[in-house]
Image (cartoon, rainbow over all chains, first blue to last red; front, top):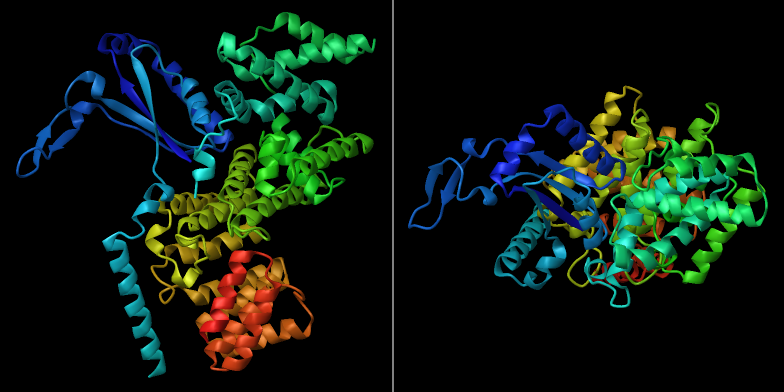
Length: 148
Length: 419
């Protein structure tokens, strides 16, 4: 099963202080953490995000979607990056999260990524059924053209 | 599909699950470190298990230590010293260990980088039978419990226990050193390691027995081990080839069974359900293999074939001619009747069933794959496409009777009945 570890800022002041630590140290710590997950065969994806000021928000609250520049909401809502790991249990995801080299002012939110089993109840979904119908028609068409 | 994995076992306590999780992450390095000290993988494994038992007792109260691997290694080392003291075997090893323990803190631990690799080569050593290699690799490199391994292979726990105990005894009896293979042995020994991982995956990809056609949990363990190997041996092209192959094959799992668990063949799979991110990872691994400039080995060639399927939007638009060429190359460097049979299937798609049937008939006349359902099932398909319905039905019925997997048998029977 896959889990996403989402990095969050929770405390602006603490983050400011963290930013004053040697950036090379931060890179080294992150690098070692990433390497340990690669060596364990669990890391499947991961990216860092640029400053939230460069981002923008599309709000679906109104009649038509509205695009607003800049970061959204409060600092504690911002996220800065993620890792996606493939592990065997919730506890294993927790153990990896615990080992992340993050300092005060940061939090990791850990979420399971949906897989096929989460949609098993929707096998009868109209769209899925429709698709099946198309495929059968197409197969019949191909067969006819072969006979011809 | 993953309900077996996501539903927690009620008999298992939270602390047990936490210990297992930490063990899964650090286990291989702990056992590797201990093997270096004791010089014997079996003894190292026993010590590690004792340390785990102690963790189960303690971590509930103290919480999980900051560095679980260091904690477990130190506890195991202390146990080793106690045992040696009792046996009054105050060897050089013992003194070394005792000194280090006095110096080291519980959160400092620097495993020797190549020790996990030594562990891999030891667990897959040619003195061991294939079954023993599989069980021991999952146990000491994959850090799974005996119960977990038994569940993956659908065999009783006692059987796995026996295999592991015997494997440890065999390693000791043969005085297998905890070392990397000599350069002249390297290709063969690496081949054995990759073979173990590949076999593990294959059994998860199309189970040879049991009610379920696929066992994704087993395939995932194999994939994890393959990725570990790629990190340990980044200069070995075939390791990347193996990773590529497993990623690409694994990407199709969601589409390979229907809601009832029955197999869905490649032709009928809903390609939108293939895992695109996994396909991208597989292709990236194949690129890493090619970038080493050593050419493609058997695994990389199979990965390249899987890539042809992965990038095609339908069976009709698949580049079958390229697949035929890849199978020809594969047949030359790793000839086998199964490769030849697969080449026949590709030829049937590229040029037509008649040419393919000639290949299959040649295999059949050579007595290849006797007793396997593979040959009659392909032959049946080809005959059906040629309009030789009676013969086709007979072949498919034969194939059904030979298939060991129940799900596969049902599909073959249904095919025969539909003619």
